[in-house]
Image (cartoon, rainbow, N blue to C red; front, side, top):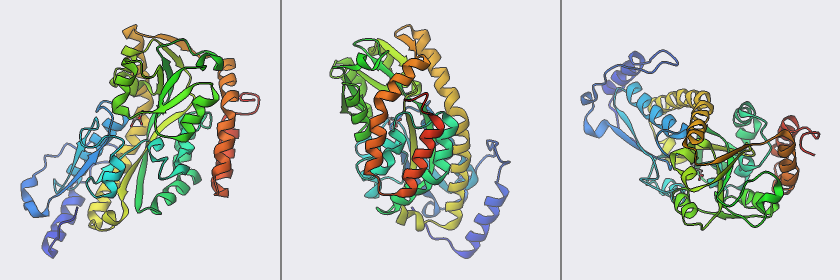
Length: 356
Ligand code: LMR
């Protein structure tokens, strides 16, 4: 990840960095002359993720890579590998820990095995809206969870959004909690999500994101939960029949690096990466709801699914059926501050009258 610099080159780098700073919020358009860098001075970082390029994560990763390249005058190149083309979601965390990839952005559910605390973001009916999620990412909840990563030598640099998940099934409409009885759903590898479906009388089966289309198409599972952007970009809607707009849970990501390798990067490279990440994060949070809304319209226009808009009463019934997953998850936590923050979040988002 790191190449040595002599003093003159160091000064030149700083000058180039300063001269290449674009106005905050603008996409830089300056032409980069990367030939100024000797091959041994250039730094190539590989960024692996599992979703399509035209999704909130895919676009944020691309934007981040472009900004880093411009900001460092071509010295640092972030190569983005979308669609699990470098590592699938069962492999990317281990690849990061082994030093085979430099950056990943797994969904929080994919961290569950190593860091069960991260299942906070998988809990149904904790976040009332997108702003509540961002506040949690940036507040005490995010702080505590980022600390947990350091125990195993990882470092979270930022969190990105996708959006609220919607339920789909090929077997039958999902209106009341009873409609789930006996159905099988693909889930991410998170115990909270398995428990969520168990409480509805269904079975949650952990399956990799890349295998999900085939599992739905072959009937190995009846349904799944995901955001419109993931459903549309991976064509899940083509092999499902019913969709309920439920917004019952959230899908978000943490951008991860190996802590030791990060410490070994030159400070000016770290600074450029953090600056680009901040900009990509701002863009991601502003645009993720729009991308999902547009993809929901595309799913609607395809005419492949019967789409049910959940009523407030139906939402309250689902929330009541799923309340025990919140309580049992809280009982596994040993961090009082995290417990308090979560209780506060849920109270704010779902007062007793809405989620009895
Ligand atoms: C999923 O497995 O459904 C998601 O975590 C994929 C992703 O990264 O958005």
